[in-house]
Amino acid sequence: MRIRPFAALSVVAAATLLLAGCTGSADPNATPTPTSTASSECLLDAQPGADSDAIEVTGNGADLAATLPDDLAFEGVERTIVTEGSGDDVVSGDLVSGFYTIYDGSTGEVLQDSSETSADDSGEVPIIMDPQQYSLFVAALECAPIGSTVAMSIPGSAFGEGASPVVIVAETTDFVPTSADGAEQDPVDGMPTVELADNGAPTITIPEATEPPTEVQIADLKEGDGPVVESGDTVFVQYTGVKWSDGSVFDSSWDRGQPSAFQTTGVVAGFQQALEGQAVGSQVLVVIPPEFGYGAQDGHELQNETLVFVVDILGVQRAAAQQ
Image 1: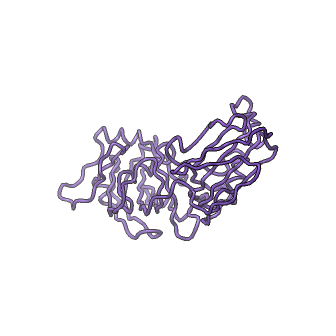
Image 2: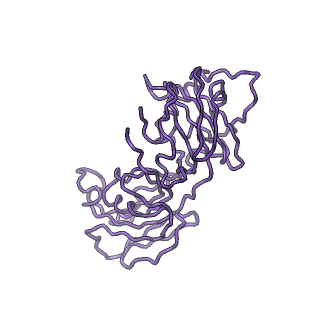
Image 3: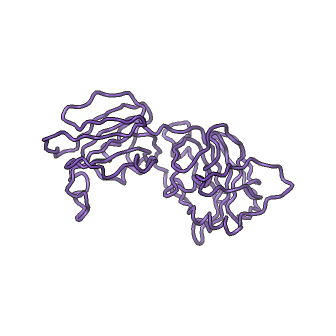
């Protein structure tokens, strides 16, 4: 059995289990373990229980691992903070770095670990706290300080009918910058101009009285020195997109208040060209004619628009090998 990177846990389903009082019953005589700090920003705030306390966590970093007892009940969602960090709490919307291993709770089989998708030999990966896409990690890591190691047990019912229970152990190491930090590059004549706010958010100005290009144009605004994005990778980015026709913003991760993540092969051709071959830490300006954007999608609101994006490349994960 394999799961895709960042297994899709329904936070709603998990929360329903908690609210129903099915969180398991911790042994009142057990050694106390650190608990997360409840906050209005916590979506689940899962608490320790007999199952999560019984998971034996060993190692850290790339050697992070767990031993699963045979008698885990998986009656509810439980989380034990095994080692409490000293940094700020991680909350929904954050982008952090860390390590993880995910196990099939029924068999103890490793379903995935961060070393499989790390872009270098460290085994470390970026982890985005996005409840819409990567909610398993939101449930495991939210409202625990950076530097913490956690063990979490989740019943199969939180993933859907007939699904296996899951155990995840994870460690956060740091917050990832939410804007590109590469070396600034000279602007390219004839391209749209870009001004950055104090937080890094771009304002894009289209050249006046200039016809849009008919081919994809790419310019580096900042040049990073991190891992290079390869085809099929998952990239973690901030971006703003505007229409060449009137300069209006049609999409922006900055407006949503958190970075985004997607595979390079899951976006329009021009955007893919702008990402692949770039290094983490880079900021890229790309102009995408309709042919390389949404031109082939009849009825799409951007079908006939030339698009302009500024993209900050914050992190990357390699595609997991399929078995």
